[in-house]
Length: 257
View (tube, rainbow, N blue to C red):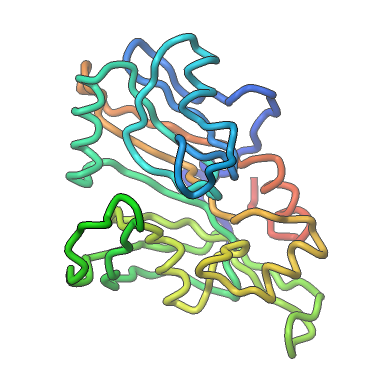
């Protein structure tokens, strides 16, 4: 199955750079292509981490930046910041109201076609920030649209099988729940490769041992928002990282150009 021209825009190869790759910048907004493994800001998740996207971008462009949405540490791709607090309030409200548009690229276990998953997710509490929160919240609405871009079969034994199947997916979250895409793919029994929390350990190990992949194969490829000042729609595309592109080539999971 091959991607459409529109979908191919989401899987372009990035150019390598020692600095953060800036995808969009004006007087109010700046977006980067966040590498996998980089925390957005200081967090209890890793008290020993020394690099953070907020500080790196601040030092790179020489001014304060404010993140307006989340991107998991192991996920690469579009991460949007604003340069003033008024714009921050405007943009953050768009994410709360779910008026932004986002799409991701992921490699999942097995052959999966396309569909729309409407499966509520139990709220995941932060053990520090949610210490005093109501722990009896009902499951939250969570909807994900998914579409296969390409499929492959790798001639390497995983468990009792002599080969393993994988799909390159376009994932479009219609809601913004914590770890929504990772949890939804697990629910479909097609977990994302490299997911150590919601994935399949045998397949993760195979990718580490055979393809030197030590990351989650999930990439935030596209984001659109309404500009806080011009009120025009801004569309941002993030090329795949070189490591992501390499593993797609290694497992013969390609998309027609």
